[in-house]
Image (tube, rainbow, N blue to C red):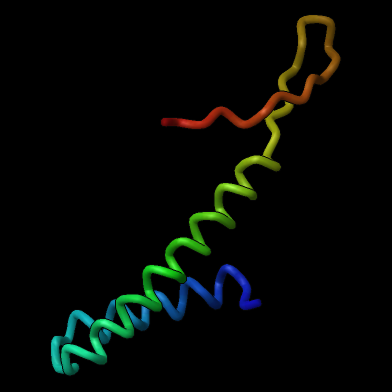
Length: 73
């Protein structure tokens, strides 16, 4: 399984190729399908990483408390 960075780089390459507009319809559709898959994989990996992030908040008594990373929806 490719790393997040490898997937993102491949996705950027696909977008560049599609933006040029010199591919056949069939090749464009294949690349688009691959790009959608890479995008979904990257999104999933980001969501998993976000779930692992914690913020340490200093309490009034000086202790630290771990809390889940707030998400925007």
